Image (cartoon, rainbow, N blue to C red):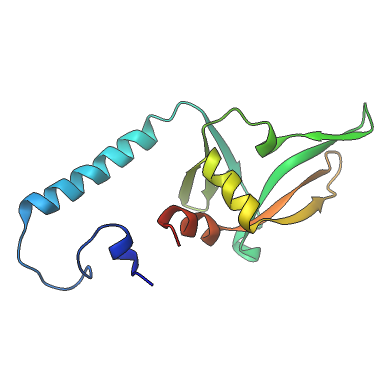
Amino acid sequence: MKSWHSRLGISQEPNVPANSDFDIDLKFGQQGEATVANILSIQTVEVKRDKRWKETGNLYIETECWYNASQSWKPSGLNVSKATHYAFVLENMVVITTTEDLKAVVEKNGRPIECKIEPNPSKGYLIKLSHIVEHQIGS
């Protein structure tokens, strides 16, 4: 299995001394700057918080909601979102992923669950934060 720095295109361990390759380091830094600029220019983002993620290690991804008027479950959350990205505000950090990638993570790793909290019961999936990270780095 490749190390994380190899998967990111870094040629060696971060704390190992190396010959200075300013042009390579500069290019790598510029790629990072472009990534952050791209993230900051996201136009449509669904922002979520999960009060229990730290205690459970899980993130709840809603996909259906109960509607009292029709007495039925209807698609909601991830199933109907028009956002291109999801952002999870977790304590003092924010994890951002594309909606497409989040759907792939839920499909691969999601554990179905029903949230019976009134007045808005919902159905969805529990995923681990690590599932999002692993998907992003291609593990």
